[in-house]
Length: 204
Figure 1 (cartoon, rainbow, N blue to C red):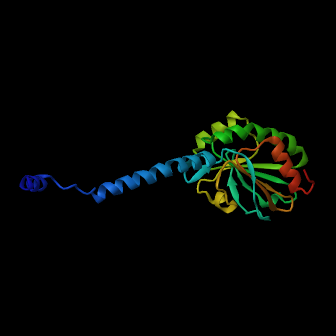
Figure 2 (tube, rainbow, N blue to C red; figure 1 turned 90 degrees about the vertical axis):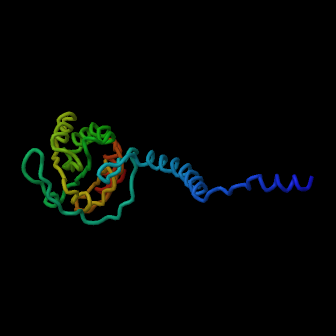
Figure 3 (tube, rainbow, N blue to C red; figure 1 turned 45 degrees about the horizontal axis):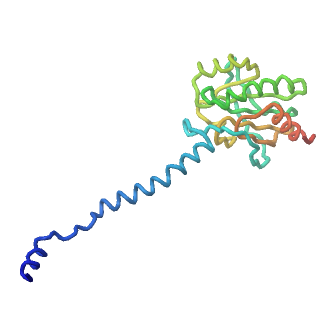
């Protein structure tokens, strides 16, 4: 009997340890299961990206340290070149946008309404088109009947000088030439009017 037991023990295969590669795969799958929901949440918060620029889907005021507005020259779609510094003494609204950006389309009618309401007070509007084709940008301007000056920033130099992190983004320059307000995401006429009033020192 003892002999039979000994022979059976020798014949039975010893349990094989789980290969280290299999354990690594299990660990990686567990980490991936944790990271996917986190990445999805971040994408929903900031929106997709294109050309390294995020799409800001929710409008909100953003922190801004007042500083002199960066001087820039903008070649306009309508011809000629615009420089921002000669506009001293007037508030200036600078909006960064692209035709493929859904929130930019959402805010376009609001910007047009704001321009029509504020231009009689001397408020100037400038649109800076980024990461876009000229044809698509022109179609966008025509579709929304945007008549204030707009031009492309093909190299992204103006975008960098302002510190833009996503589109749409809107900046308000005070009559003294200081960057006074920054709005990330789509903006409404009421919100923009309030920012302009604040930049002029008039309060909300």
